[in-house]
Image (cartoon, rainbow, N blue to C red):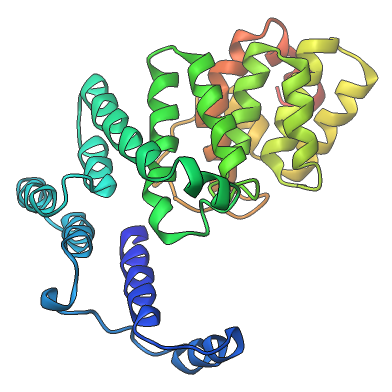
Length: 290
């Protein structure tokens, strides 16, 4: 579904590029006029090799693995620097070591094309720019892979770089970054990034704040109050953290306070809670679960 949305956005960008807008107001009027309409796809002969390669990657996600790979081979023949193609290869690779190689290749390409003057001009806008989104997706996947193989510090550095490139954090990596900073116990960095998003009232940062307070302060009144706030925001989290709950039908999206949100948090955070001495007993005491 996400890749279908990306394809629509790519087609929209191509459509806008064919127009000769005289002003921003004229462009906004044009966009308003096509809302709800099907965005047309462009025939291959109207596309550059790079655009044709991108479309092959979009289509690959809807094909069988074997056919998808053939699409990627064609895409890389058209554009050897197609970052999205390497993202697909990493996403469909069973070996994490090989996936990392694909991601490193994609990131190397991204740093080449999006460094220097491009970076100076567009730093902070990397999610809003269509051409840099695949690069940001690869950075996210690379950070996750680094964490899995045990390179926590490197994973944190990638997340910090992503925040610099996109301070609005449309990808929601702040939750993972703060969770990893709980793991390292880095007080200065945790406070820095928590402050950047302190207006957030989501469940996940609330549980991260509570856990960080417990790890760095112990069973203080401040830590307890943070935990009680988090527990009030989502009643499912404590139960799933404390007991061996199985997760089925995991959703890619969730709403604040619902069970899908609890599943998302617990899958990422349970091991870290268990590694901090006394954290689970502290949680059990204040959650009133037996």
